[in-house]
Amino acid sequence: MMTSRMNRKAKMIEKSLEILDVFFSLGSYTMNVIVVTRSGEFTMQIGFSESVFDIKRRIEQGLGIEVSTQILTVYGLELIDGLDMGDYPIIVEGTRIDLNIKNKEVVIEVDPNRIQIVLSISKRKAIVEVDRTETVASLKEKIHGIDGSPIKRTVLSFSGIEMNENYRSLCEYGICEGSEVSVFYRNVNHPIRGDQPSARRLSLVVQTTSVLNSARIPLEMFESNTIRDIRRVLLDGKMLPQDDYFFIHKQRIMQDDCSLRWHGVEDGDFLYVFKGTVSRDQY
Image (cartoon, rainbow, N blue to C red):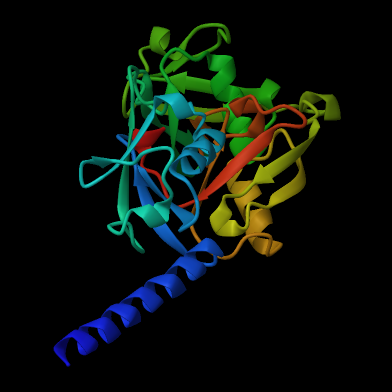
């Protein structure tokens, strides 16, 4: 009688495992995991039937980190390319998967030349991030991208000295972390339309992750539009659900208050959008 009861229990367990095998083989079960890098983290939707290699390939598409250099680990256990997510019972909803890079630094790294400065424009102040080696002309272009001000009429000064040589770098004028740069505009009796450079219209594609159905969203924007403008268009047009997002272009995290021109975006380029936020240290 004891043997019969054990046989019935074994058959029930075997049947349950068969049901789970069918369920997982259909690939119908998905979950959200958190991929953690040395510079930050982001959420990724994966399927139980999805292989480790496929996960790495999606990361390469979004962040530009080559599959061959990626090491994915959970609790110190390396995930093997030939296995599926369902082969790892420790991976469940909300699991943190560590992404490490072999033999080279993380692609998204902190640049010591990046600093924050204060722009004093009329009666308001704006904090922007710049590169100490960029030129005065580049900073004027960035200001144009923020508020549409005409570049040719823009005058910058620091510590009472006019920054009137466009080709000089900011560090040559002594600009450092926390410096306040005054911005004002020359008065023109008869302003002409040519005073403000015409902004090209760009055709772009915004590529979402699998969490957002891997959609490709075509957009037309001006090169003077900022990343904040793009996010507003996508949210207001209900092309993305209301949430926090950040964008990546050519393996670099894009800055909200900088224009497409400043980021070097060209006609036909892809912008990759991810759920989440990034801190200043991740730029």
